[in-house]
Amino acid sequence: MGSIIHVLEYFDSLVKITLQGSREGGTQLQLDNERVPDNKYLEMYSGWVSVLMNLKSVADFEVDLRNHDPEKTWDHGFADN
Image (cartoon, rainbow, N blue to C red):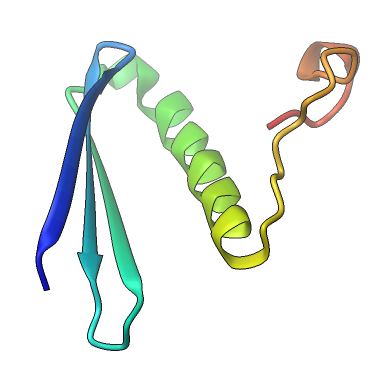
């Protein structure tokens, strides 16, 4: 079971995404976000939860949870992902 590792820069931080096959035939995804400034940690932490939950919904149910309506954003009083 080999690993596939992707590394990218994201808002002055470093993101490492590792995909590894499991014995059960699935895939394990691990995301590490490094070099996050202390004053941005909570914002980035909660943002990754949102990204990963949407990824899971797409992979498991083919449903995209992101908002695609520019008139229904956080600034307009809507929950926005």
